Amino acid sequence: MKSNCPECKNDIDLSRYQSIKEGMVIECDHCGMTLLVKSINEGIVTTEIIDEGK
Image (cartoon, rainbow, N blue to C red; front, side):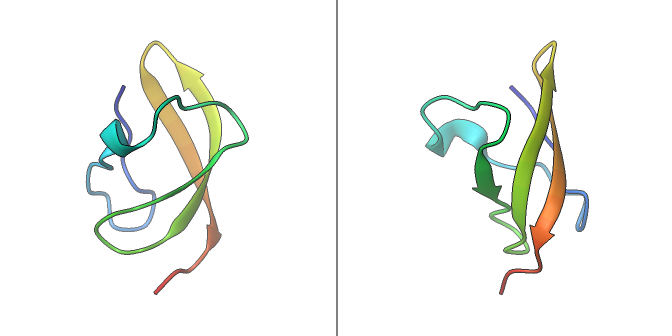
């Protein structure tokens, strides 16, 4: 699965999450943004910012 951070546009490392599901909260390992998984479609994970992070 792949995802890009909506803030910094970098790829998010999803390998540290056992199983990604809609509604799950993840963090961008580049900029620290807290992200909500909105949808998963054909291996692409779409997120939205829920906290500005570090």
